[in-house]
Structure formats: C-alpha cells, structure tokens
Amino acid sequence: MSVSTVESRSGVTPWRILGAALLVAAIALGGLFWREVVGAWRVWVASPTYNHCFLVVPVAFYLIWDRRATLDVAPRPDWRVLAVVPLLSLAWLGAAVLGVLELQQLVVMTVVQAILLAAFGWPLYKRLLGPLLYLYLLVPSGEVLVPRLQDFTAHFAVWLLQLCHVPVFSDGIMISIPEGDFIVAEACAGLRFLIASIAFGAFFALLVYRSWWKRAAFMAASLIVPVFANGVRAFGIIYLAHLTDNVTAVEADHIIYGWGFFTLILVLLIVIGMRFADRGRPVSRAAPPPSFAVRTPLIVIAAAVALSAIGPAYLTVLDHARPLDLSRVAPPPVLAPWAPRADDKDSWSPVIVTPDRAFRDGFETAGRDVERYVALYAPYGRHNTLVRSENRVADENTWPRSTLGSTRIELNGRPVTVSTAEIHNGAQARLVWSFYVVNGIVTASPADAKLIQARAIVEGRDSVSAFVAITTPLDGSAAAARQALTSFLNAMGSLPAYLDRVRSDAHAAAARS
Image (cartoon, rainbow, N blue to C red; front, side, top):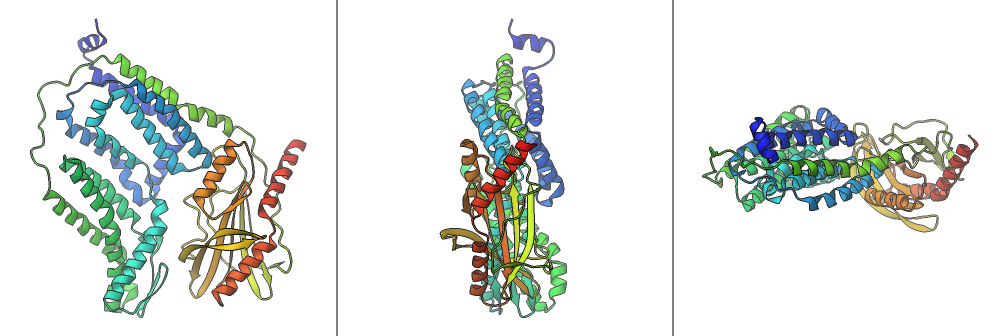
C-alpha cells in the first residue's frame, strides 16, 4: 500500500504534509540563520523604507492561491539540486565572515529557493516561479544606491531648473537659488519610493499579466519611473519655493508634497498598466489536486536543510576563536612638523559601526588644522564590521556632504587612491579623505577591502585592518587643503607597518596572559 493511500484514508492529504514539512524546514533555517532573520526584522520595524516587507509573505501566498487552477502537476523532487545547497552554504560563510549582512540574507533566500526547487521539481516550481521569487523582497536591500540616487536627483533637478531659467548653483547635492538653499538628503534620495514601487510593480505584474515580456516591461517602468519622478519632485519643491518666495513653508510641507506626487505616479502606472492587462485568466477547477507519495519530498527537504548547515557549523568554530585584544593599542604616531592639538574645537566625527578600537584626535602646523579618525578591527569570525553600509565619513545631520569622489596621492612614495568628500555645516566646509588598510594594502574601495579580507582568510592571515578618515577646513583653496592632507598622511608613516606592530603586540600580550 502506498504512502499517499494511507494518508488519504486518514484524512491528511500529502499536500498538507508537504506544507507542514516546509514549515518545519523554514523554522530550522530560521534557527541556523537567526542573525539574518533578526537583522531583517529589525530593519523592517525601524525603517519606513522596508515596512512593506511585512506584507511580502501574505502577498506571495495570495499569488500562489491565485494560480491554484494551474497547479495540476505533482511534486517531482530533484536530487540534483542538493549539490547546489552546500555551495550556497559556503557562499553564505564567506559573506558572514566578511560581515556583508545584505549578501548573507540574499544567499539565505537563495537556499530557501533551492530547497523549494529540490522538493517540488522544476515542473511545479516553474508554475510557482513568480510568487516564490517575490520572496526575495523580504531582504532589505538597496541602501548602497543612496549616494547615487542623491547625485542623480540633484543633477536632474538642476537641469530642470535651468530649463525653466531659474538662477541656480549646485555643489554636488547642495542646490542654491536666490530664494534659499536646498540639500538632497539621504531621506530625499527616493530609495523609499523606489523600493515600494518595485514591490508593488512585481505584485501588479504577476497579478495582471501572464506574458513574461509584459511583466518585464512593467517592472522596468517600476524601476525607471520612480528615479526620474524623484528628480521631478525635487525640482517641483525648489521651483515652488522660487515662485512663492517662501522656502521655509515649502520645506515644512515637502514630505506631504512628495508622497502626494508619488501617489499620483503610482496611479498613472496602474492606469497605463491596466490598458495592457491580459484577459481570460483561468478559473478554479473543481477537480482535486493530484496526489503523490510524500516520502521522497520529505527526505529531500531534510537532506537540504542538513546540507545548508555546513556553513553555520564551520562559522561557529571561527566565532569561538579568541580575538586579538586591541584595548591597549596606541594610535598611529604623527611626525613633525605636525603637533597634537590640545583643544577639540570641531564637531566632526565619522559614523562608524562598532570598531574594536577607535581614535579621534586633532593636529596642527603652520596655522593648518587636521582632524583624524582611525578605527581598528581585529580579525575573528563574523564580527569584523570594517565595511558596513551604515558607515559614513560624517553625521549627515551635522555635516551633510556635497560631493563624493576619489583622488590619487603619493603615500610614503607609493601611489594610492583615497575617497574624497566635501561636507558642510552652515558656512563651514571641510574636505574629507578616507580609505581602508587591509592585509597591508591601502584601498579606497569598500568592495576591494572585502575581497582583500576574503583572500586573507583563505591564506590563513589574521592581520589587523583599519579605516582611516582625515579632514581639514576648506577655508582657502582646495589645492591647499589637499596639500595639507597629503602632508599629514605622510607624517603618519607606513600604516601597514603600524598595523603589523599592533598585531604582533596583541599576540605577545595574549601569550603572556
């Protein structure tokens, strides 16, 4: 007697057993990857940009229910997919060691998709492809786009103001017209509306269209239109201030104006999208879904969950390794003619996530001031937060930035690239240079810093890494500010050599203890 026959006589269908098994598997994955789950939950709760994530699972289930008439195939488990699960688990391990939470969450969601594909088989998984891929919207991603969105919004708004013959001056994300000054802040970059538009666009496309080219076209519109619409919104706010000569009132109500405008854009997308809607969607069939032997899908699900635990198991070993103690490390020395400044007369400080040791101090020479920030990170497990999306070279509420870029300089006789930013606080302006030092290499690129970290882990190195930011006032020529920062960096000596000494001293202290 087959398993499915026994189950049907007991009143429990194999579909319910399969659903219960997938629920248990989801709970098990939540235990294995609890940091990713908790991290996503906290973002959903704290950030209005991702509040919609609470609706993703209900929407996915509704989309599956909407396709119930097409689910006329039984699961055909595919054992070959199990070979991919360990590779995904190892990919998660690499992302976790490097501390890229967003990438970790994306890999975990891909593990979920692999388990579903293995349990369902391609014929059934293909029928559910849209709703299942919609689950990727559970991952709160996109923060890395904020600087680029800020720049595009500012440039597009300036271009429209020039078309309307409005006198305008732009310095990066800072826009000035005769009536007042405006800053395209991170909250005004348009990411919130872009993410919401993508989530709604995917739901609308999956619900209204059956052809993939129509779905792709509507998704493309949901990606492109919000970006340009945000530029138009910024232009409209500034132009309204120009027409009314009342910057204060416009700034006070710009959130209301913005969301009203975005609501109108969504309505227009819906109206246009409905003109191309596919008609004649299949209706629900009276016939019951096909029966199947549930034993094989259950074995596949259990095996996939076990294989996905490879990465977390190995990372547990890394997490229990004793980290280097950097609590007594001295800051990098600075040679003459630079001398420590006794007073702390500046409010600048980067926003950096949980370094193992941090220094902030000031120096001066020949009437020139430089502020320095150095964050050190010990190598261990998943806790190295050297590169995080939350890190900033300044607190935007105090020092909003106007420009971002990079420049090549000579550092101890070697050419290196550093990131550059101009920040402003009222009439004050500062030039900020920042970079990473990882495994003896100086780089301005966060992606390169992550890759160098990965290589160091593969090679078994445990080098201490650092984030360095220095700044000086832009109260004269930009060339003088660059010259001061170059002089100061060279007075700090070799930072890779300093980090090697820090590592050696920390190991020696650990051996003595």
